[in-house]
Length: 556
Image 1 (cartoon, one colour):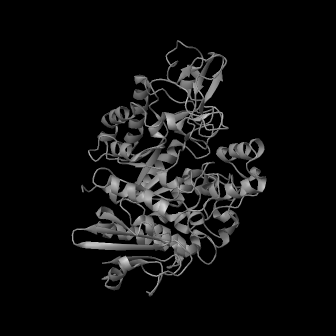
Image 2 (cartoon, one colour):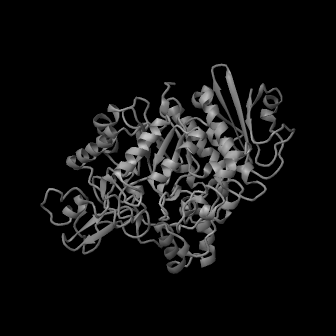
Image 3 (cartoon, helix red, strand yellow):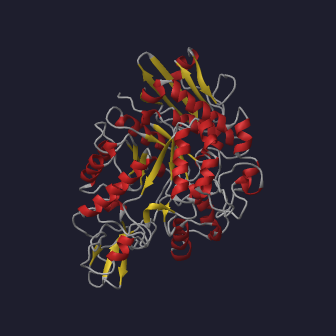
């Protein structure tokens, strides 16, 4: 296995709007991030990924960009960014930018020009199609429900938007568009950034023919992602991007690849370095979904999760590289989702989940607040929510289809909605969790008085300091980064067990996903009894049985 700094890194994702507000306007900003860099350095973080901070009308929390070379006023200025980058580097850390180039804002100068006429320079920077029988060109539905097409009176045509209507898709088949994107990327690299997290990068190459997709009974639209993902020229474009930009700098690159298969991932994250370092796959995030997608209170069946992660761990071993994550800005808090956020078990289960993930093969990602065991929020009314996806699904499943009652839907949003990840970071016990002196843009979780950074940094037994130990072990033990992965007891509904092996060293990882005392399986009992020491555990002393939410890593 070829060694690389980005394989050995631990990445921390910052959602700027919710991280730290320095000026009292209720919105996190770049100066706020600067104030908290020592907190991240102390944790042991090597790479910081900042979600979009570019100039934006903010129709989709910054993922609708109107100027790729400027900063959203709420977050600060380019001078603030330069200061942030310098302060990150001063502490020996690296900074990754979010690259959002499947689409722009409809306020981007390119689109404002494109919609003026069919024959100007920018006319085919985006994907325009004529109506078909007076209707949308195809029956494609967007990611946030509704049609993926928007009619423009001026051109008399529809443009494609896979997300909100204010996010028109760029036409990557236009060579000039690609050159514009690469030029912008080089501009940021010359500033000194250390990598890109590429938003929905698997969607940039559209089908050669625009045809209707299959429709499920009772639905009006065919989900566009299943049609546009991993398109016919996506690898050609990424290899071109690599030649033109990525290979010229020492970067970490991770692609968000919706609808990716294992075989496709081997192409995106190939070990020959011709495309990206790694991808985010979402298969393990869908194991507790059902006919209404994630909008369900279906419980996790552990063998389903293990089956997915084991396939990705073994499938990419030696040929590509895994990214490891439970939480991000689009997912609910994992301690509430797959752990136990009760007072009794929150800390234990948060540490267990961290152990299970960080001991796997791949680069781990920590989402802000995950290292504190921050939990989901309980929303009682849709007016408390900000996320467009939550608001749209409420209309779809409560008001229109009447699948759920108001109470049922709010309970499900409280379990699965994206706003759970976006509530402000809980820094201390002062008003608004120390996030802002003003009115926070999104409500603070009331449990900040018991779950906050100030308390945990000082407590050697806290979740924060447990994460710190996990991150330090990764720096000390090559086996955690480069060891081979083997799963055990794959059908066990309560325990996640696997080994890591490198040369003459071997680790046994046992994680109890339940609140029950369980016996050690016969298949690993001898390894446990003859262990040569414990690398890390979320319990202080050993025991004959596996205790609730126990996670222990044995040297065997």
